[in-house]
Image (cartoon, rainbow, N blue to C red):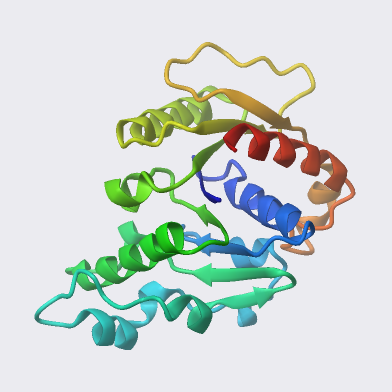
Length: 245
């Protein structure tokens, strides 16, 4: 199953991506996590020290030049060997750090974009494993062909009007591109949370409350795994995966 995770910056979508990957890996699934966000914080969320986080593909200029070309760009470069070559094994997960297509650097980013899009399409369309992609706050850089091959979109929001409006915008954009199977997670939700009426929101499938063990850890460690509230998180993730399947 291939899933994309999106939402406004700071709402916890990278944490949700890590929790989904951890949940699946603990159940024996072969899982690939793809960091396609500008912030590049998925490795830290998994507990990797900064020195062990692989450089994003977007910065591999020699590889980009080799696979895509310089003056004449190959729009369908060979990428099937790259996931194993570039991935970092984290416990029972495979982490692939791509970087954001929308932040490919100064000047013309055509070559970098071509390689990133080809690799993402390969993971989503041709691979048989679970693939969870941590996106920027949008889905347009997946490309229309690729986004149609994603099995579902998880939109993460905080319980605030601005965050929910962004979630509705992302959801509408995805539906316009053909991705209609969606689920909304509201993170850091109070016990009495009620979803306001906002046009375009995907169905609310799960809420995650404030996590005291995460709050007490954040200044000392970057990992969001192995929290005291893991059972609560597992229940939320299970509901979302059941909805999208």
